[in-house]
Structure formats: C-alpha cells, structure tokens
Length: 383
Image (cartoon, rainbow, N blue to C red; front, top):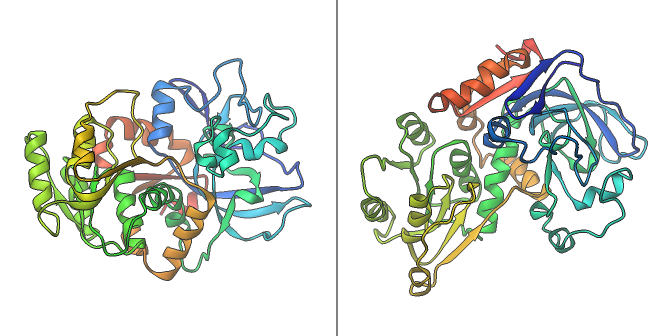
C-alpha cells in the first residue's frame, strides 16, 4: 500500500510497500481514504518528534503499536469492509474519524503495556480527550490517513451526508471539531462577541465554530496579511498587530468590540505571551478566555488580580470528543457552517507521493502561503 510513513524525527518516507491494513477485530472497519489534511501537530512531530509517537524501542501504552506508522489524522473516507460486530455502518458510508486513542480503548489491545490496568482519572470522568496516555490515529496510536486505506473501530466513526458535505470539505471536520470543542468548553452564549487571536488553521476554523454557535461580532487578530484577507472573506473583522506594543494592541482591540470596552469571549490560537495577555485583558467583566494553542512548555507572566477584579474566567481546551464531530456535521448539514466558505481554507490538493516535498516541507518553509493542504491517494480527486 502507498503511504507517507513516520520513521523518526526528520525521517518521513513515501512508501509503496507498506502493509495494507486488514479487518481483524469484530469492531474493525476498513476505510478507503479520500482526503487527509496535515496540521501543526504533524509538522512538529516531523521537525521535533517523537512527541506523540512512541520513542524508538517503545510502543504506545494503550494500543501497543510501535513505529514506523503512517501519519495523518484529518481524514475523510468511505467504508469498504466491516467486522462481524460492527453496528450502524455499512459499505459505502461516507465517514470522518474521531481519532483519539485513550484508556477507553484498552480492552481492544490485550498485548499493549497497559492492558488490564484501570483508566486514568480523566477517562474515568468522561473527559477522555485529556487522557494521561492520549494518542491519535496517525500520531502514534495507530496508522492514519496518509495512505490508501486505514482500519479503526466503528465506535470512532461519524457518518455524514456526502450530498451535502463534499469529501474535501469533510476532511476539515476534524480541525473544526478542535475549535468546536474550545467554543463549547468556554460555555459560549449565542449572540455574544468573540476575539480570535491568531489566524492560522485553528484560528480560522474557530471562526466556523463560532458561526455554528450563532456568535455575534467576531474579530480576528493576525499579523499575516494573506490570513487577515481570508478571515475578511469569511465575514469577520480583522486587526493587524504588526509594529504595535502589547498595550497598544489590547487598547485597540477593545475598541473593536461591540461595547468598545471588551469582548465576551476570547480564544488564543497563537500560544505566545503577548496573545495570552491579550486574551485576558481584552475581555469585559466576567468574560471568558480560552487557550486553544499548544505551548512549548514556557511560563508566561500572569496578574491574577486582573482576573479577580473583573471576575473573568481563564480556561483551556484540548482536542475533542466524538460529540464535537457530530455537532459539526449537523452544523454543516443545517447550513450554519457555509460549505463555500470552508472551501476557501483549502490551499491545494496533492497526491500523497508528493506529500513530503510539496506538503510537509512546503508548510514548514512557506506557511504564510497556506492554510490547509489536502493529500489524496486518488489522482482523480486532485483536479
């Protein structure tokens, strides 16, 4: 089988001889991959990993899978084979994949290091997206979507209406689910204002998550002109922080809020000290700041009195749960998330054979030119 395989830091290989996955367990479903996107986590794995992938000589503690593995976790696909215990899915169904690997999967892997052990606290509480042993399909837990086929449990699949949602747009349901979860964690209220700090892929998908939750005014702060212009095409206001001090940015951003005094909600999708500060200080009284970005384990200055005196809330959001995917699909199918607008995020479509040079390296070296590059093993889908 053809696929892009992670062998270690800086070592991605396009292979045409990778073993094709097979249905083994009763709950297994084999998928024919149509499109797969890559995100910042994939790029960090390539440049700085292994992070999610097991280290050399080790295996994933939940699945027992070791490297090398096929990458890719933003997947749209169709069902081509089902196991004997699969319920609710049939050959031909269009699906996306909820890609977490957590303690909830322990019973599926009797050979894995943690088989038979109790669930971690997060999984016991139902917050499995914060699992102590979190892995992702295509990022260490199991082989992903940058190949021709993949196999996963039917419990991780979400059906969608392919007549309403095209396969290329469906590959963006996963990153939108990241943003949807963040909006849900923030306890967003319909009609309220929101500030998005950072107009990269997750910042832009946060616009759609907010639209799907019927937001009022949305402002995006982003230094890159091409991303600001794209955000404006999505119908939101933008702000250029270039050349301004953090204090100047905060004051000018507050003036862009409906009241001129601050936003109800903010979402930091950049993960730098200045955006974290702005996410808190641009809020009005009892506003909610949500960190969506993955930080590089760096401390930042924080004045708790700024939160206390205005009774503000600061929280964080990690990954997603299956219900986020289901709600995103419903928002698409109901028209709350416009298909034509989401298509604007797709910068290019390339064959997986070109995926290293024209995909990973292109995003690393020229990220300002791109939002989302989609890979496909099917030549006919690239026009």
